[in-house]
Image (cartoon, rainbow, N blue to C red):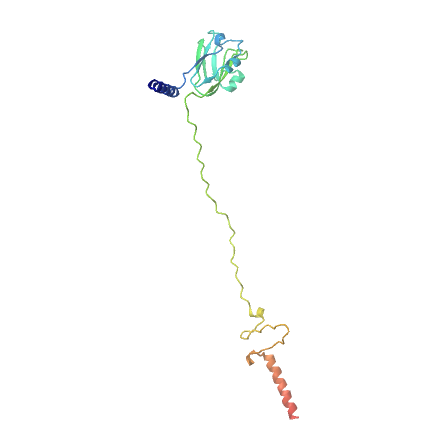
Length: 213
């Protein structure tokens, strides 16, 4: 039991050490035994290898006959070396791969890049664990108050006596029930108009004269 527990503990420690230490960098010899020269298919050579940050490329070539320069993507396509990112002509050039992404290399001797001395490699991130970028926290949107059209309060216009058909001070006429005789009621002499009073006086005078006859 003790030996089994000790073996498990040693295995756990080994795993932790391996995970804590990044993978060792690798040095790749470009073109393997063929080296850096004309007549080699470097596209096929690159596709058979996996590159990561920290690795390096070693270009072996005859000094004075070839060179190596790291260039941009545009200069790689144009086989131009006017603005190299780095170059060497020592015959044994080690070019470190410091960043992830694509890296481009050419021979700056006239006609050699067009003749096939060009290399494109894709470099992945380092083997160490990297924290994933945190997602941005969305900013809460402030609720907007819906716009409402102000309404004008409805006001009732006072009714004029002329519109109601009633005389100020007079008793309102009671509605007539269908099938019954209407009953008219006058509120005394105050309810008679001046014309009615004149008519009544004229009729009274005529009656008095008839009696005198």
